[in-house]
Amino acid sequence: MSTTGWGNFWQDQRLSFYAVMKMATSYFVSEFEKLYPLQPTDQLFDYGCGPGFVADSLATRIIQLTGADINDFFIKECRKNHPASRFLLITTDTATNKKILGEALNGKHFDYILLLSIIQYFKSANDLDEVIGMLRHYLKPQGKLIIADVLDENTSSLKDAFSLLMYCIKRGRIGAFAGFISYLLFSDYRKISKQNKLLLVSENTIRAIATRLGLHCEKVNGLTLQRSRSNYILSHTR
Ligand SMILES: C[S@@+](CC[C@H](N)C(=O)[O-])C[C@H]1O[C@@H](n2cnc3c(N)ncnc32)[C@H](O)[C@@H]1O
Image (cartoon, rainbow, N blue to C red; front, side, top):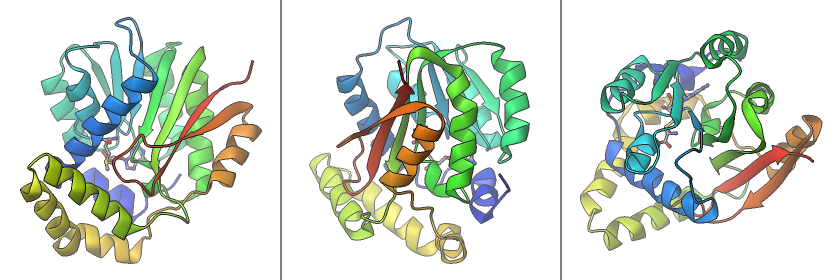
């Protein structure tokens, strides 16, 4: 996997659109927990963990969390805020990441591996194939690999913005929504997104990757705030 404009963008990010990202992540965690009530012994790997919003949302319930991200600043924040969990600095290159994870995880296996709101920043579906191919080795036999907030041909920015707006209104967080929209319109994010389209990954592509890697694939609705995005649960076939 090569570094793209998005890889460079995320490696340099600091505290942008935190409020909405945190809200969206906490929504995901509550929906995810309805589907899979987490046990204190569960091991969770948050791949592309960002500043640690999944860890924040689960802080009172689970401590068996490992995170990984390409952004050094985010990893430092995660380590500072969640000293009992482990956070790994990875790269945009899968071959390098295989070595990093191989050394750091040393045969560890997870009940859940999350790829939440990250694959739209990959360069191609081939990168996703490589990452799933790498991560499946860290899944327990009954483990689930969750790919959430996936953009595809049915994704509509307008519908997504509307669902976010409704949620922010209900929560009295209209300021967060306004901050998010102004960030999208006036920051580097807009410049980068003009040069590097977010990656759309169709259901057929995800299913084909899963089949090739010998994984079962289930599509799940409603895991994320942005209603026109898709979510998939991959698991070992028995
Ligand atoms: C929108 S944020 C989502 C953060 C977190 N998953 C959440 O939902 O709260 C996208 C994250 O993906 C990370 N990321 C981008 N490209 C990546 C890659 N190739 N491998 C791993 N992480 C990546 C970014 O550094 C950033 O933290």
